[in-house]
Image (cartoon, rainbow, N blue to C red; front, side, top):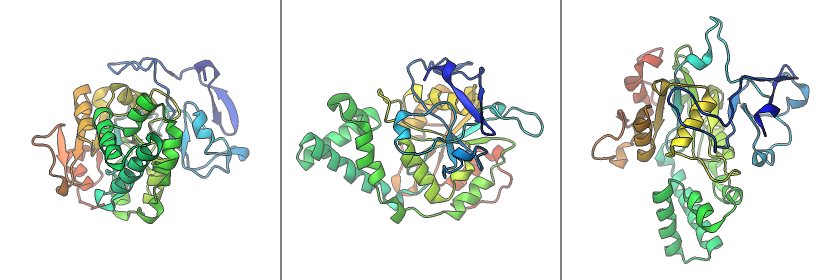
Length: 322
């Protein structure tokens, strides 16, 4: 979709949005996005368009709709502008943004979701590449180490359909049997002052998986949007690529690196975030051990410690364990 063809829905009507920048360069020190294909999801509590009201998700596209996403939805979602004005007439885009990773970050590794996923990924390698199990395990780990995502190696070297991979791996996970609402996590997120910072999801998973996880956790209504790795668009743009961080900034509507705050369980992602000028908190659970020395500005063992590293964003100082 060309930028000139983009439209947004306001109160059920279509309006042009000449100020939207798409596939262009993020100003003030971010990275060029000329080759990025991306789609943004934003929170809406209600939809004024009667024909669109049936869409039950609370995360909706802002800038464009991925053709691959349309296969998962029978109705078009509502659109809203990336730049909103508060009651004090202050642009939302002028606020800092706190980016949250999803997997093994918003839920503990003790859920063993990663183990379920690793098994499904290895099965995919074995079945689609006709490999012995031991070789499938080795190649899976090699691609994960080299690319940050096993799927990137599959797409690059074996021309695997990433959406087929997503259907047989991420979407095949029995998450409904594993992940449950987390009142403590919700309380922690609700204590973040939205007058001081905006909350945004930033994941290497595909949109269906990301939305599914936050909905099961009972926190999908607390984030303004979601930046994800679009498996329907090759080459894939994912963390820790610099273009992925630039994509997240552009989609969240933040221009300055100094306004970007981040929490992720991945060492390489937090290291890259610090390198480009973000402020990052590396989540290392007690059982993980962690790196010999911190790779980013902060290292935490529990999300509740975000109060200590980002105290300026919280309403209270009382710890609430998610």
